[in-house]
Image (cartoon, rainbow, N blue to C red; front, side, top):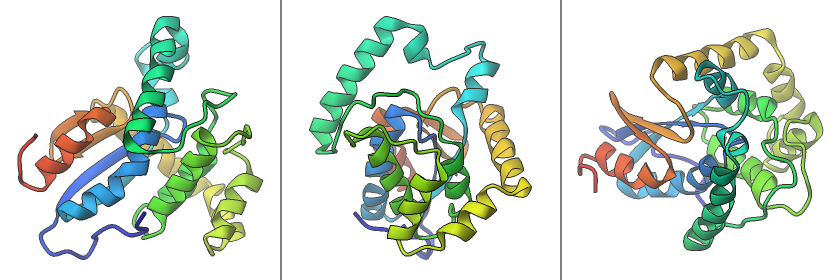
Length: 213
């Protein structure tokens, strides 16, 4: 998959991609969005945020997939089907949801950088396609991903742990709540909101000026 997005295409449509590394359906969209957007000449604006505070504001103290057993059982079957459909690797994680604050902060630092898509895919693959129960919130795991990408891991992790970046992630999460986001992935094209991986194609078509398919 391509590392970059068409940031420099004059007049390219733009799509805001709000996601959390702990989210199963965000996994599907993270793995798809960059290549699909590039084919349509759409620029992806990466918007990492924390689902937990959003759920709490809605009165949920945990993932709705854990709160409602039937919904959770359906989700695992649905994700397996969709990964097969999209030819995306899949292995049900032993721990769900994994805390993902550190990689979200790193993604926030890199949101406008060409490496953010590749970084996000690698974190997602560790979370949802590995037989090992990786702690994607650990310095060691995130640092190894950054090292393998040829990025300055120690400097990026130090920045991610700084107060300004901690505050930025809090502010971005609050911005998600103010925009009316109630789950992930969510997409915005201007003021138009599209919710869920199954609306990614419609959102991209809308951003490309083709209307929702």
